[in-house]
Image (tube, rainbow, N blue to C red; front, top):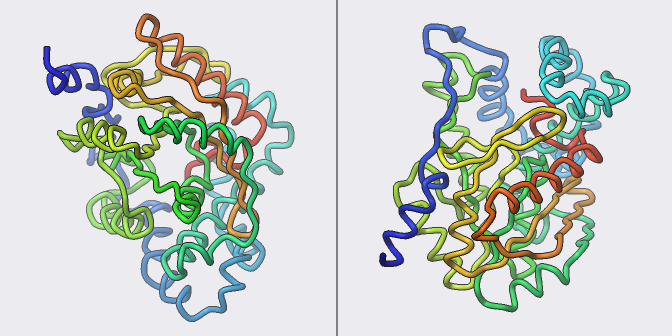
Length: 322
């Protein structure tokens, strides 16, 4: 079997996704997330252009009191959302404190996106720390490409923009066909696409999971010695395994492991924390996909993600979805 056929066969879980959807009739006409998107995309971005940069750099301090006044519906569903992850629920302690910390971080992440749209990449991050730099440098030096695997942490976009300034440009694999359950019919039809277009201006180098050539584009980048990042803490795919995760059973994609095996590239787990004021990026030791036991590789990654989330629940995107 030739390489092209092998990639198409083995990477089904990267090139094809199954997204849970809510029937349009069951969605409200407008949701809280729709209102957030509408305010953010138009008056919010306009204000971002006229406000002093220092206000955006400290949005979690300037705008948090106002945001708290509007967060009632989000807070009311927060314990129910968190209860889906029993281990995280047990480790959370004070739910109100966790909610407010996460809310502040999510608010700052939105402001950091505006900063990335307005400022040159090298001017966005004030202070940074890179832990495990030697792991990425060792993997990158092999010139086989590097597959960075991470969880959905709030600082991911900022970290990848910053990595480009360090000589590590990253191609992001994104699910642009996701049917967001928190949107209303108005947001799903008119706002989600515009929000994704805004994010594309920030991310730039990305490939959509729904692109029929997604797997080939990933392999091509790896074969050229490039870096590709995908998130694998909450997977929606056809080729997957079910593993213990945060006190529940969660499905993890394994198709990307086949791509890494075909490319012969190392896999490097990554963690991104913080914001524009202080950004921390941590790289774990590289490893190679085990062709004899894909589930074993997936289980190792799941353990890393679980540890990261339990240590930093206030920065995991799925702790609270707005």
